[in-house]
Length: 497
Ligand code: ADP
Image (cartoon, rainbow, N blue to C red; front, side):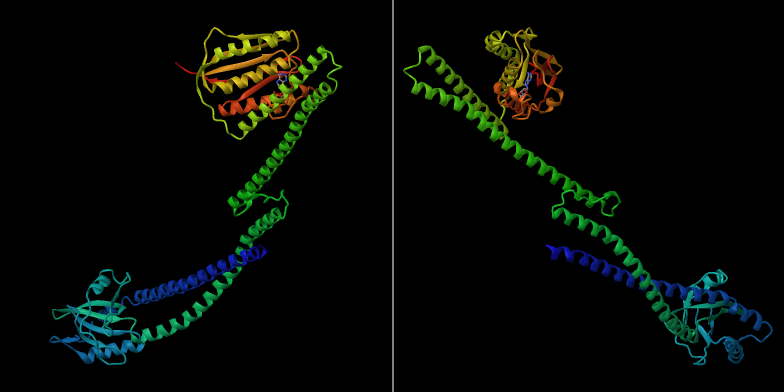
């Protein structure tokens, strides 16, 4: 585990470094290439602009008063050669060509090979473009000495004895090229090394800072995760919104919260389960002990007991057997509901009829306790869509409770009222009421408000009701005031005929 954790960050740093080195190399070479390209272009464009008039000058100034350089259609080589050599003595980088109107080379003056040229003609398109724009726009023309190569040039048209053509001067001649290449190489080696080194230095600094900043958050997160792993359940990434990996930080915090939440839930479930077992054992033990006591008394003192006493003891044992079976039934019912083994069978039925039946069933008990048990709104026959036996069970528990916690001369009312698409069912009593702070917990199993009242029930009745409501996707609300009474209200979907 720790091995893995240790290698995590260096691996990431290695990858980041590799990316940086590649970036530096790429940037360095692109920088050199782009600079070289534009420097060369800049130098060529400058040279061409500066020397744009050279060819024109040759024709305008030098041949104005001299004898024409074309005599009877052929080149006056000595004259042309002399003048050109004069020019080239001043600027050795130029090569001068005399072209006819189709671009054919009539004569050339180049520095090292006298008047020899490698190609016989050049394209006129760039020359015409150059003349048209008065040399103000950059254009490359054919290099007669190197077929396929393009050079900067100056050109001017001539017209002698009706013969037309061009004076074509290659400005970056072979000599220029040699010097320029040499210098460029030197410059670019220096520039390349300098630029690459500088870029690498900056990248190193930026890279180190970037990696430090990036991994700063990672380190913090790893530290927090490790702390959590080591048992510090409160460990969270502080200010996740300021983190570069906000989503990750938030996810971790949420995950930690839900782990802690689940653990709390599991602990409370476990606590409840233990409580349940303890309570169930207690509830089972008490009636069993009573039963055992009375049965033993009946066995031992059978002869000395009067018939009346025997009947009384038998009644007590009977009551306790009832209690026991009641508890066992409730437990069984609750555990089935909790294990989600009960599937409601929903169907339309008359809740009015069911209420009448229940009221009739509990009337005897209510009369015994001198409680007025009423059904409100019986005239309307309300149909609902629900599981009839589960709803009956819920109503039974609620009426039982109402009667249980209401004193003599009190009143218990079961009212039914159609509200929109639902039927509202309300069981109201004028009994003891439930303290406000206890109200949220009464639906939890084994919660009894007054522990002294425990003998009256097992704290399972409302838990069962709650489960039945869940199965019907509805909720039950309690409104209660101590010493005034309670109302339990829930809704069921009305069935429209
Ligand atoms: P029990 O079997 O103990 O009645 P329930 O789950 O039915 O268990 O009820 C839980 C607790 O809620 C009861 O112990 C009682 O304190 C309170 N309670 C339920 N119904 C009423 C009521 N109608 N009036 C007053 N208290 C009630």
